[in-house]
Length: 449
Image (cartoon, rainbow, N blue to C red; front, side, top):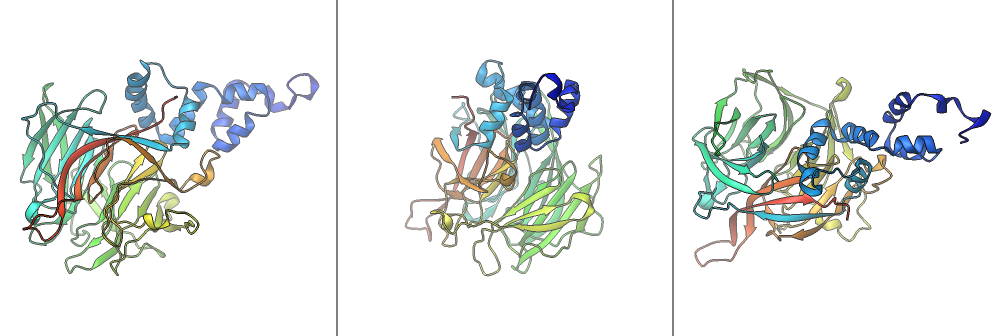
């Protein structure tokens, strides 16, 4: 494209704000191609302000603000990494680093080892509830881990309440702002539950004072059948999704429900969503919100006790909810047999992708691998594969399943607690299984170097 004389095209005469608005509406590949046409477009399409806006569009303003508050200041002395470079590094992510987190005071109380519990990031704290422990007993305790300014240091674990909700494992607990929403689970008598609870964190002082209030949510006469080992997530504010699990008769379920909660979190309404096709019944799978209208389901154990590797996306946009199975071919890859799993975690990270960790295969072999799942890979020049196995550096955690994971507000740090790990077989034990109480952080390797 010529930039001077009578050959200049009309679009070159637009003021910069109008060009900015046009570019902002384009997909990433179109922006990169448009920038190659002339110096004027290249300057605008490469500007830091423009790419910050693109990151806000793609990742959300809350994520970008959290990055500004923590990542940039911690790693570059307050100087920002160029947004275009950051976007590219996130799109090309190939490795993560692990860091084991410990309480600095040796005699402080810490949560006991457990599995099938919940872990959430709320108000810059980790909130742990329930789970199962040694002897097949359920737990009803709630713990809060106070994090340091870098979010990679546990300053103190604090036990804030017990007894409410009642003890359980295999439940679902999701965060919505400063609130927690909990549903279902199994107690140590094998009884499945279908109660819904709301938790609210409140900091009472600067010296690690915290209160957490649980109360049962009024949901009216309609509620999903009791279950445990189901999957769930939160989309936008005050909407919780659940799918599948194991019902009271021990049969795996395939139903899908949405809980809509009032603005003041005082009451809610459950609705079952029935569509065709839909994911087959399963338990021990994951359900993760990937944007404001889509939720992704992966893996689990099916009706025949086989472990699954199918990927489904639920699209709730435009008033026409539907499940779509995402097709991918792994036949020519050396790691084809590594993907089916149950009891794994799948967490939304920076860049709108899922980080899948751990779990078990059909032979109950526990995994210690990290996978990146990107259902939007076909949209970007930077990414070409839906699955990518990541390299891991630093602390080497034991292979595990039925652990719990969550991310910070930016999505660049993930936290993992507990789970079932392979242990040394003791004479009095029928198996070598043991519960784990480690907590560690996973950081995306997106530095400039």
